Image 1 (spheres, rainbow, N blue to C red):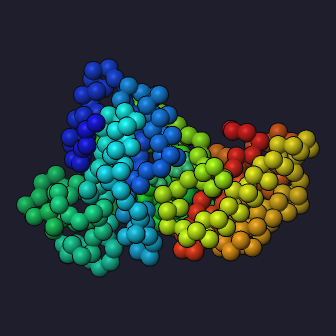
Image 2 (tube, rainbow, N blue to C red; image 1 turned 120 degrees about the horizontal axis):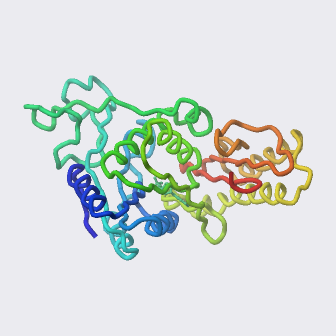
Image 3 (cartoon, rainbow, N blue to C red; image 1 turned 90 degrees about the horizontal axis):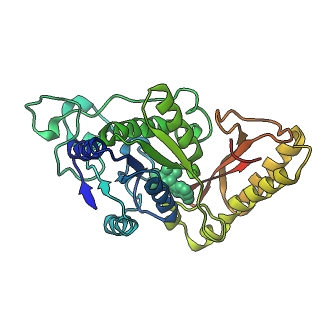
Length: 326
Ligand code: AMP
């Protein structure tokens, strides 16, 4: 397994495989890998000849007050897990996207720029020619946005989030040039945003949505679960419990759910989370593709119920597809 930190070397690796007739898959991650991530890797390996996993805690998707600095990291553990699975390359860029945190981004003050980790390599900036030392290169300023899909749900509290994801994923696509990229349905809105970007910008990449993996007691697997206290970890089960009740109700209701019934079900999920000590960000039932909220679920209709809630200072996401998969 090759560990690559340089974007040009990554591109050369991928191009060499493609030139030799091998298909390339990519699994983008932020590391601290758990079985949910590894299920994506297995899916990617089954769909390609060679697989690259990227590990990059993307500063562009964190606001200044969020958990960028405390996001869990375990580089050695991640590399061991990926090697065991037979991954062919790991792309670990130091500075894929440099964001301005505060102040004047042109003043070259490194204090004002947020990078993935302390600077050690030259930055991957877009300036082809520069006589300046690396520290004086300006922050990146180009963003990719999916205008409609990034409205609502997670964007209400994290308005910066999806453009940060879409931009860095677009960069990863340009650098790794994969035939297939696998994303988890755990981050449902993210998956739909990436699929929309790929469609709209004509990336020749098959984006696969892999199933959400859960702990045996139902909690959606997440790197952030490691930061839950024991009490919050137990109480957070209210999220998956509530979603399962709704999923079963839809599966067994032959006449569908009218507006009032659906609203009651959503209220039940909210109440369950709140009574367990959680702070609900949203519980919404939406169209699976457009993520536009739906008010009723006619018999046979497909939708997805999406939840975000905080337990302590840990924000958790979960969702359940209702009526099957679109
Ligand atoms: P992250 O490292 O959190 O950015 O996640 C990297 C990828 O793993 C994303 O496509 C996530 O949707 C996916 N992922 C994270 N947790 C899970 C899970 N429990 N089940 C399936 N996919 C997941």
